[in-house]
Length: 207
Image (cartoon, rainbow, N blue to C red; front, side):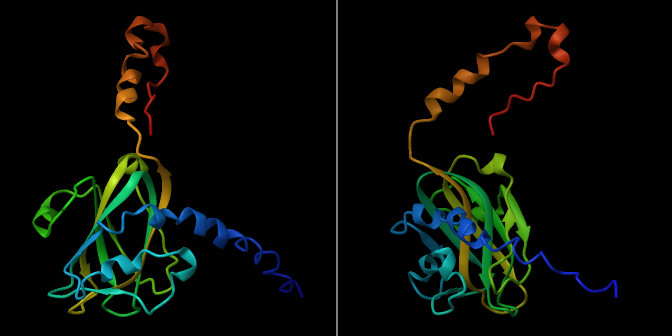
């Protein structure tokens, strides 16, 4: 008898989530699509097709497929400054799905020769045909991104890689000259003047 009644009340938790996630995944609107590059795409221009609205993330009519091998490299310029918080990559539910991505910031015109350098962050991916797995970025490293490069370095064993959707979650600000004001913060406090109070952790980082 006591086994009845379980499972009720859980269905409502995520009901309003898709609309909110759709807003959060709106950075595709901030991409300068005219300048976006996808290296090693099998058809010119297909790389641009996978950056699309949240409610179209499961559409299968538009995709990008790699050409010579399994690697793809997206060079994504934004129209302003982006704080990148998460990424979703969705492909086919087979070995052509990306298995690893490496993220680089602010290296315009990046080529495969540049992918030997240390990425800002790398992820091992799971197959995600329904575009629901988000990989959270280290926000401190991706807080001032004008250009994002995504290197798909391997898939699950197929000769080519196929991608249907890339979702970017984060915040966007217009391209202002923030650099002028940032240097002012450094001189705002000198803990050496107050040695007694210096037990307070000096964690005044601007994230």
